[in-house]
Length: 114
Image (cartoon, rainbow, N blue to C red; front, side, top):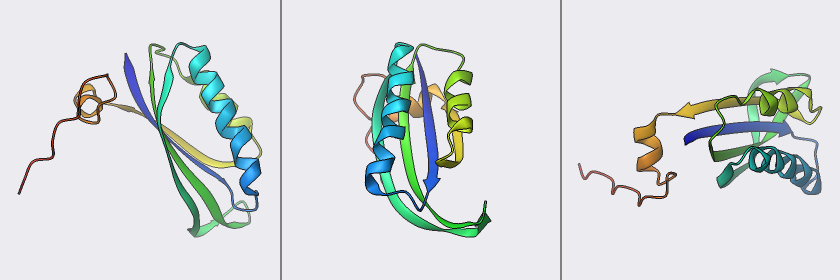
C-alpha cells in the first residue's frame, strides 16, 4: 500500500456545487485503481500570494489517498486537463508518516508531549 497527499486549488469563481463533480471524479479515479480516499479536508476559499492565471483567490482541498497503484500519472493528467483546477500537487507520504496518520488501518500514534 502507498499513501499520498493531494492538494488541489480550484478556481475561486466556482460555486460550491461546481466543486463536488471534480472531487467525485478524483474519488472515482482513485477507487477504480483499487484505492480509497481516506480523508478530505476542505480549506475553503483563500487569497493567493500572487496572481495565477488572472485569478486572485482559489478554493483549496487536501485529500489523503491510499492505493496499491504505483503510477498516479492518470490522476495527475486528469487534474492537469481540468479547466477548473488552477494548481495541484501530489506527494507520496513516507510509510512512517502514513502510519502515524493512521492511513494503513492501524491506530494513529499519539503526539509526543514537549
